[in-house]
Structure formats: C-alpha cells, structure tokens
Image (cartoon, rainbow, N blue to C red; front, side, top):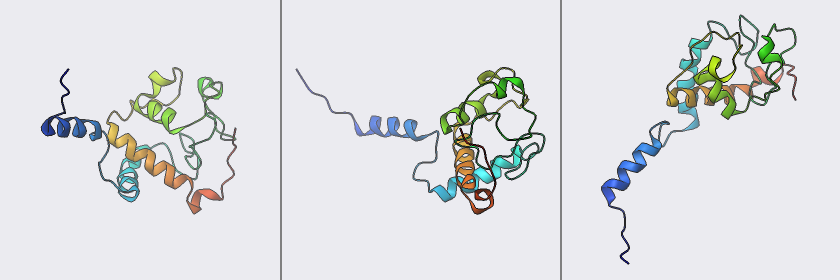
Length: 140
C-alpha cells in the first residue's frame, strides 16, 4: 500500500480555511479592540455596568441567564436555567430568537463568526476589568 503525504498547496488551503473564522496570529488585545467597536452595536440597548433596555453585561460570562436583580426578563430567559458560557453566548449572539424562542431580544444577531469571536473577547476581558469587578453579580 502506498502512503501519500499531503501536498503543501493543499495543506495551506486547508489551514487557511480552518483559521478563517478568527484572525490568525491575533493577540487578545487586537480581538478586544475590534470587539469594542462591535459592542457599539450592542450599546443601543446594553451597557457594561448598568441596565438599559437590555441587562448589563458586566459579569455576563458565567452568569445564569435571566438573573440580574431587578431586570424585567422575558419568561423564556428567566426560566431557561442556562449559564452564559462562551459557547452559549456565541450561539445566542448569532441568532437570539432561534437559540432562545421567546426571548425579548429582538435583534437579528451577529452572523459573522470573526465578529462574534471579537465580541466575546471584549466581553470576557471587560467582565474581569476593574469597572466590572466591583459590581454585585448573582452567580449560579
């Protein structure tokens, strides 16, 4: 039986396809900076430290869905028992109403994989920043 080795050109194409959703060779600071720009879209309804039309985002990753005290969540969100992991957030941000039918978040979603990656990097870093660290956040 002959053993074939992959051709360098084919390997390069496969590698570029595998890395295309995110920015290859990226630093966390680069992803955070791009995520801050993408977060401006969220700022119409959300803020990091305070509730607006949507709940605050400080401490979002690791928080139970529908748990910010005093915020009027939809029944679907309150009853979901979901913990906001990065994987769950990625799916929710991509298509909120498909991920959680009955959510009050009437936004179509961020369809671009790289943009969601950067937005999650921003939320992850901001969630542990000094401005978020001092807020009381209910944990599961």
